[in-house]
Image 1 (cartoon, rainbow, N blue to C red):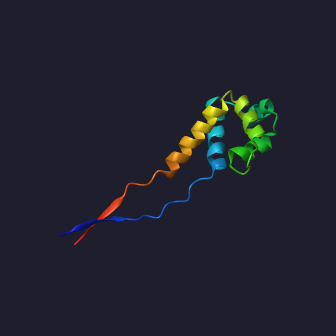
Image 2: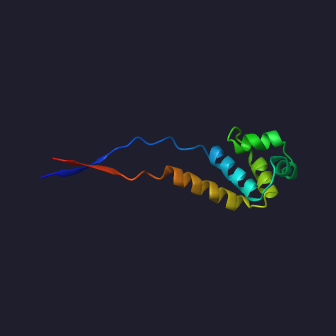
Image 3: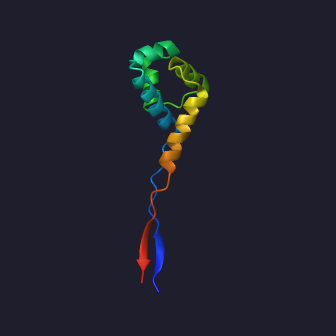
Length: 102
């Protein structure tokens, strides 16, 4: 009788929280049609720092995240939920491959 054996596929490394946060900040800024300098000015950070946040190069403090969230008119709860959803989607296991063993 044949037996079905699940194949283990190597998992890609999970993205870092700062990478998903940065992508979410950039998406929200683009959705608003804003330039980096405009959002950075309202948040009280330099455009270079915001750019590094969006590219996942900085591990921003909670104060910096709150400042940028405020500039984008998003709550920390909504921003954190979006980041968590992004991490959850990235960590979802791929569809299991099966092999029929004879």
